Image 1 (tube, rainbow, N blue to C red):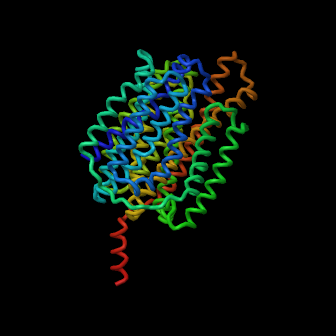
Image 2: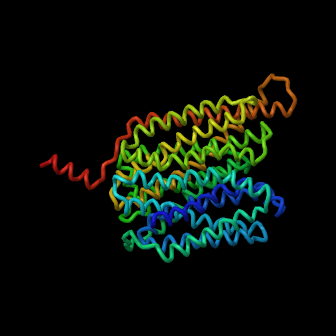
Length: 475
């Protein structure tokens, strides 16, 4: 019951990450704003999450499960209400930032609770259930948003979520209990500042480059990334030097955790490549409507929702290695197929490819994450969860920007160098296809690396059991 309450809260929160994307054009019309201003509703959301997640390790140790969950849901609900009644873009942005603050707290908290109360041998099933949330919710977001925006005001996106969020708060207030032990850790303000500048700078810089803020040569892109990189170097040095780090980087001493984190980051890039590039191709090249473009993602989201608990049970029985090898092989093959789609590729074929891609991702994401955290001792669970969640967010921002950049630059070179005699519109479409090919081939190459890394993945052993084995061998 405890986990199901939290899962419902996380579901509505994560759903909002992709729910607003299709509605941006309607919001621009209503408020009379430019695309660069409207994109702040997405960039600002990612920025707050990227800054807040590293702090969750401290918050989870400092506050009780109940108070932290209710506080996060209150922030999210307040942000939803503010966004629903927003008279202008400034108030709408404030609402989105409040939503992001709540969302950033919820998923790491849920993961930590699962690893605190669920026995080792059943964690795969529990994390598979959570996988329904983090995979199905963002996948159905564009489709649901397209249906609503086509028939109603974009404000319905917020009014529809509001009663569910209020129900979760009321239900959690009466039923939710504390399950984790709290301590009184000190927070290092210098680490907090460096973390904010580091992760915030990188997420903002890469998000800006992918959203038309002047490309890679713009100071709006280069300066935040440079500040972010320098800050993260200093942040890493400080975490290793102080006794109570904000993020305990000793998690990276564990080999399976290191390799699994790399695979998780690559999987996020692969998932974002499809969620971002396919709708662009379907609308701009094939002339489909936003709703039709969103519907391409729906079967994949449904398959991920169905498969997540199944792969969780398979993980409990067989471990993560073979699931990862099969899943990453499927992802790599699908990305290769995407690299060679053309104007004559049928709509249904693209939908099938995307469904197979999401099937592969569902076989990898939660099993690999569970295997990574299983290797850590319990005191490091909050830090491991925060690190994986943060790096996934960074990977999403970096991957999106990188793939957009590859697509844009390749398209530009195609138009400059082509000898094909076509009219302007046709040439632009051919250039887009050439750009998408290179972007998907890059994603394929990254997933191939992840597949090689997964060859060395082993099944995690609980630290307490591992210690007993070592002691027995010594005796």
